[in-house]
Length: 261
Figure (tube, helix red, strand yellow):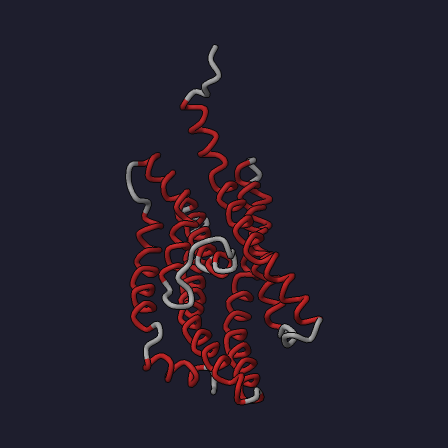
């Protein structure tokens, strides 16, 4: 017999493992983006070339890493038929997800105040460069608001539907977790990007992150699953708004007030 795998066997394999593969894909993106740059920043901090990382940044990194690894573990449990373990482990997600949102909301003003303090203390010749950094940070705040709000909304809906609509539940979980992934994509130096000039790059990379799952669903069912429609209903309008506000005078004046500056 030839070496070609029957289509039905391949379809069954992907159907069973697609969410495991998606979770592994998210892990690879995260590690590729954060490991090299984190090591560089830690070395710079230890050498006194940059201020120490705030505690909330460490907390956010630990929570985000834990949530993505939990996603992988949950996908493996479902793929291997261990539903009871999946349901028990899911309780950890109910704790980690809101903690992640709260820590993320606290981290935004902390970073703003840290850089603002550096700007005020810097010599005149360095202030122009730091002022430009503040402009970038205020722009990035738009993406952070989008991620925080939509992540909370879609995780909340997914948890509410975990028993009544498992298909919607698992897709919304993955779609929510994809939202913060541009933070990793932006750190992969060899990838093309539009930052900090425009937010188009991060927006497109979110779509790239979820593309394998979307394409497989489309090929299998010949229709767009309702989870994607719900997700796009929040993601696309908010992305357009971010694009319009990026670098605008109004946003640059408003953002500092939102963080108490």
